[in-house]
Length: 319
Ligand code: GLN
Image (cartoon, rainbow, N blue to C red; front, side):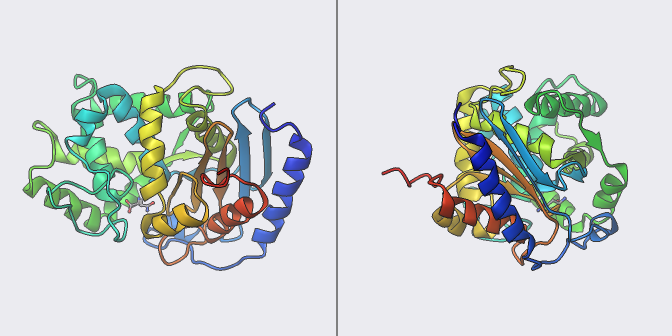
């Protein structure tokens, strides 16, 4: 086993879980009513090792919409289907140093990276327009959901239509980002602007629970092979690229500090979820809707910081 003393390891995780539960900082996202109604008390942690050992505690069966946690997943699918050169002809690899929905492009008039809204909207355009372009939007939605499910070892994904409709209704900034990118000819030719935006909102509105998302993180930790089904869902070179950008850009404008303190690739979302990858060891999902002022889950960030205090999972611990 990759974690030989899994029982005692789980006990330690449980201790960190309870410690973080006392942390009641943060505010639930309020830009749409469906998220604003979420209880800040929800707190779940799920772990799945690359050899399929699982542990979870707390609200791990309550579904939440993926929101920005979908960004590394759509990026991974685009990379795998199109190759890194094709994808990065359209989107950069640099942290933006700004908020996730800031109206800003890089010096080449491209979105900074695929982990912020502008970049993720563009990745959705690539997925829609360049990957199997004959597919309708409905077919592309199915294709994407199927791929999410394969990453999760066959767990069913849900789709929250109320969240989707609200996202689309409250999307002035995302439309502004889209139009700004269209003005600068960022999109591939033949992109349908409306379909691309809808597809982005749909990806944000895919729904799963902590247990399921932890398996996706474990598939990334295992170089693209799902530890539960042993299916090769992604190529290792795609996973390498995804983890690199999660490491440098996955935690919004806290990414630099997170890389310094925790030293693990991770991606957060306004849902309060966090996908954390310990390469070659395990995937972790934490979920608690209370967010700090940068948009990261307060308990999730604390959990990761406590985790690397106890275990030498920081990328540069083993020097
Ligand atoms: N749906 C959200 C948005 O596009 C996702 C952003 C996030 O999770 N940070 O604004």
